[in-house]
Amino acid sequence: MLIIGIAGGTGSGKTTVVQQIINELPEAEVGVISQDSYYRENNNLSFEERGLINFDHPRAIDFELLVKHLTALKKGEIIEQPVYSFVTHNRTEDTIVTHPRKVMIVEGILILANTELRDMFDVKIFVHADSDERLIRRLKRDIAERGRDMEEVLNRYQTTLKPMHQQFIEPTKAYADIIIPNDKYNTVAIDVVRAVINQRIT
Image (cartoon, rainbow, N blue to C red; front, side, top):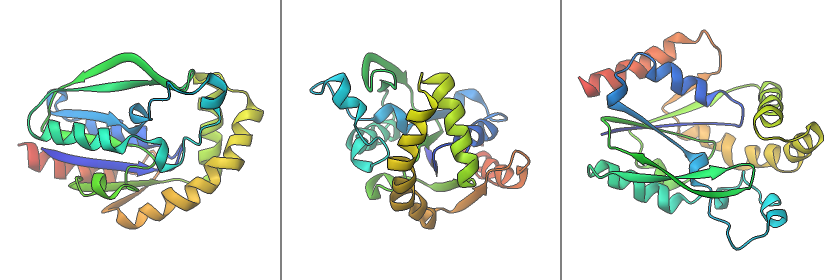
């Protein structure tokens, strides 16, 4: 199994890069795991308390479970990925049954910040985007998809997103094998990644 880690700041375009990579690959041979599914369970906290969690700090992520699940997939076992709700700030009762694939792509802002997880990646990619561009994308997404208002998003950006990005996310660029400047027409980097995958699955 080839495991590819795709990191980058919030709104950098990681999901777009994932889509570009898998678009021309056989669907049955590539799977995707999102770090967003692995936020810690917070059943012991009230809704108000959960809303105060710093979701951009590594401690918010259940890396132990993510590593355990990737290890199981490598052994050929089926896993049940948790499903996280950004509306309730907690895991739901649902799970996603995930089968082993020849290629597993793991994407998320903090996936290169954890040594154990990072060591599992055969290819490490960092998607870079200008901070203004990332903020604009984050605003659009959180307002449209997560029911937040502009003041709430901007406040979170200034108090947690930006400092956490500088402290935990940006430094992980140093671990990347490939850095992709987020540009819709950056086909060369995507083709290089796709070639590496094709070589492994053919």
